[in-house]
Image (tube, rainbow, N blue to C red):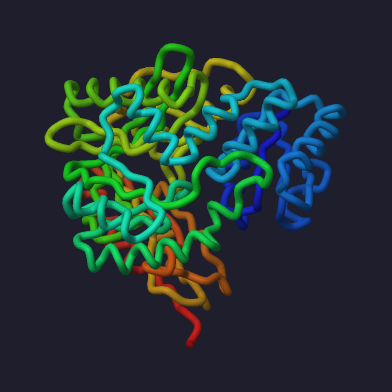
Length: 415
């Protein structure tokens, strides 16, 4: 089985661990980057196009496909979802289609699709200047959420509590759009939909994350995770717990809205990452990405729900129905978090043996390296890694996780 995976613009080596998981499933994996470095992957399985122009990427993929005969095209990168759909279409391989990919990438088009289908969502408005943003804030009532239409990883996403904060955050977000990686990394020459900012009404309930699968008329929630973050004014300080605390009744209601939203986006055969938040006791859709979730959500799914999102990506990519069931927890408790430090240039990150060798640590991924720049709000949302622990209960796992996280020392360069 041969699969081609694509990054339009190389994102350091962030996805290497995912690529390794794909290879461990017996896949002969080939990598094509639009823009990136020459030594990213073994030379006989790697192509660097040198440009992220979609026509050039399609031409390179076609030439390679003529000799290798790929069984499918996949990606783990949010910024490559549309490009992969276009490449797969051009190669005559299984694809979610460019329209569904665009709906799944652009938050405005996504919201509009949900609205047409009657899916419960926050009130929203596409804003082009501060006056529009202030008018939306006054109409919806503060707090509101300000976010980019082509965002990812909570970059430039803010809770706004009043007009003064709106003026400050709107200026920061507008400036940030000009060099935001997740926009700059999109393929050139494709219709991305409107690029700008959304103001949304604030949903005041609990948030849940799902690794899900759309297959023809059915949607499966493979795993369900509670977001237990103590929220501030940005949304990147993610702390998760599984198994979910949702009741069977609430889980059924969540499944109903996720299924409706996936079909509204045009997703009929796709691995998905869905986010739902309750408001006034009812589940509302935040978004569905046509890819698996980041961080350690794939590991969490396997441990706590016996569902493998990476295997699902491989199967969907080659047009085979994945092995999946409706959510059924294994009973294993975990908590997991993004590792965050102050902003600056990384000098060194020290992980002591009691962290790296703990048999209760199922997730330890340090993504920053010496010389990397850590940006914190309002300048960015860079994290330096992920940590997850198991336990006999949520509190047991959480207490160990926070203790071990405190032992990881990040040293920054002197200014």
